[in-house]
Length: 403
Image (cartoon, rainbow, N blue to C red; front, side, top):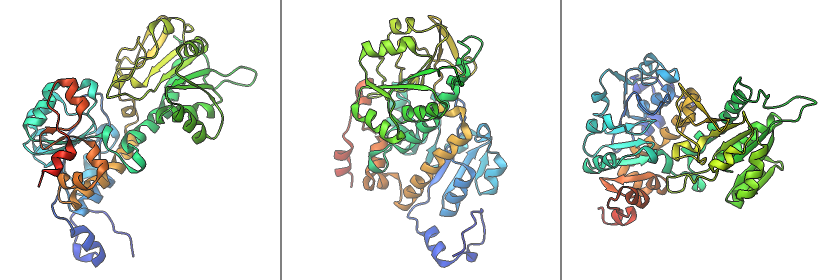
């Protein structure tokens, strides 16, 4: 069968019957609103024009705020050509039944939310406020967090995809600042006759693995630390070579930090907060002009000396050590990151359509259910409830009584 051209508002009579059956087999049409991101230094967009074309032909309505994709190099024209509606007022976007964002809901958007809407966006717990959670609850919102949505084999697909990007990009950042005028003036990969730079990675998750891969390709001397022996073993198996690995023994870690040219902090958060495993004294003992990249700054950071920085002023120096602590690093590569987001979110939205609404999908799909932190106004994550001193409702019990 010839492939279907994803173009808007075409004559459906031209389609084969099999395609018509797929396009029209929807219990409820999803309307998607994508606002322009004005906060959290966000340049990504959750849907690319190609994905919008697919969703429009699947029966969804997509409304996008003017220039919402501009930072990722997707023009309004590109979205219009595939069937999206471009609107110039944010209020119009928030009239859709499903709000899709690449950054968390901001305080300025809370009043725009309608009762019983669906919100699919990151939660970024360290920056979340009690007022935001209570507003979502009072408006009976059903909210899915990027960070909590599960895929096959208990993976977190959105976080995994963003982590691949961040892991690779962290080595680019390391190379830039290690060779800069305020640093040690060292080429990260080294050359013949000169020992390579030494990189310490704290965290053997996806970010750590892809940072390790990229650094090894440059010939860098890599040591990886983690508090989980399984993750260290998995990293070695995945990259297919032996690298120096160690559990998070503070004495051994401190010795390696003394010799490090670059340290990448990539520990995963525990209940929304990253443990600080590198003390100020450890940082004080590092070489002058060495570089710290705290990727975990989004969830508090794993260095005691870390302070959030911005893309305009990405670094500061403390104890003669350069600190790079910009949150949401994936947004610095917005086009690649937007494609990665879109590839994951598009099938989810199609399934919302297929099951006749997000509530039905939550009942049928355990991975999506895990992503829900508010369901019809009920807060369903215990650790969020504890953080903000709010009532928690077990989602499984809620669903068993939700007829």
